Image 1 (tube, helix red, strand yellow):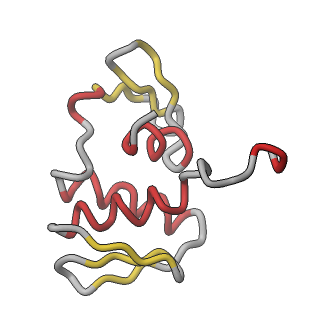
Image 2 (cartoon, helix red, strand yellow; image 1 turned 90 degrees about the horizontal axis):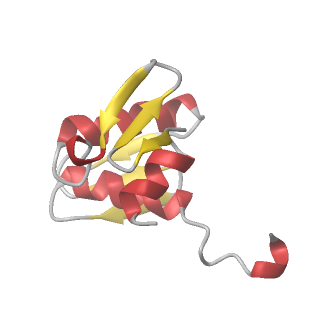
Length: 101
C-alpha cells in the first residue's frame, strides 16, 4: 500500500469499493482514488486533520512546512505534504515487528 492508501484505510476508515474508488461509510459517499490527493491539495489534507482531531490528536503547525499530531512532527515542501507525512508516520506500522502482530 502507498502512503495515501494507508491514510485512507487506517485514519479515515475508508474501504476500497472498486479499484478506482473509496467509500466513506460515515458520510455515505464515494471518493475517486484519483480525486483524493492530500499531498498536493490542502483541502484534502485538512480532511485528514479533522479526522485526526476526532481521534483525539492535537494538531499544530508552523503554517508553512511543518505539521504535528501530538508529538509526531513531519515536514514537507508544502503544508499539505507535511500533514500527509505526519499522518502517515502515525498510521504506518511497517516498522512493527511481525511477532507483535
